[in-house]
Length: 337
Image 1 (cartoon, rainbow, N blue to C red):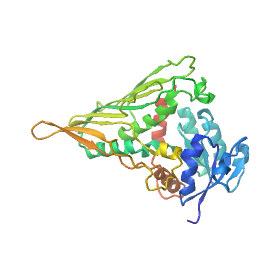
Image 2 (cartoon, rainbow, N blue to C red):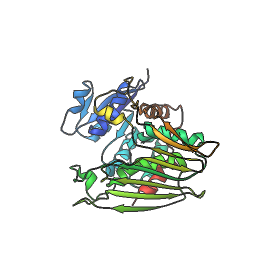
Image 3 (cartoon, rainbow, N blue to C red):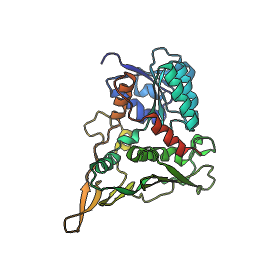
Image 4 (spheres, rainbow, N blue to C red):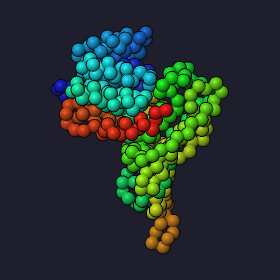
């Protein structure tokens, strides 16, 4: 494809190596050109033609780059995105978009004045499990939804060596980490809530940040949505539970894309994003005789490539991005402490 978007990554840790570089590499609309690695040379080992810069200032000075990926620690997102916009670059920002709603509003305003795009990387909207439950909800088979539960749990009792995730600094804690995904998914399904309440907990020995967080999102139509993230769950609970007047839907977290990418499977592999049998969700409804009917709901094919299609279209002017500004501002209003 001609007129490719030349891309620079601000970091090459797990995010850059797993969630960004492979997709830019296989997508016909992008060219992965440069990366910032302050002391290592991991990117060039994977992509021999890539340019390695030792600081982000030099990366932003590269006039060939049109898109910068801000995949640095949460508290730096606003600062680096602002610098990239001022350097004349479009920006794709890892979740959370910023630490505060005010920062996001400033970035949107700056991008508008510069005639550039500043986009949110919310890849979990393209998870196979989420796509499956969203399909059922859109079908209307559950009827009016009265209550919804969204969870994202892990088990890690020790304190991580990644200080930016564990120290009491802006944007740290499990709610900004995993909660950012689930709040975004709740907004994608139901819109921005009319009110919300939050609860935080600290349980790991020596922790400075929340390792359990819960949000109750309330809607004027009577819907209650409960979003929970917990760092201390050994046996994973269902990721999605929806109660409707006509039935109930339960789905475990089963998306396979991250394990596949960690195993070195490329996004253009025919097996990419396809769930194994046995990971189906369960839909419970009634037949005409009021007997409970159990139905397996297969996962859709997960595909983060769709996000990069959206990025390309947004920058080249061929469509609105799948996450609008209000979605991001609504998300950050809930995340912000």
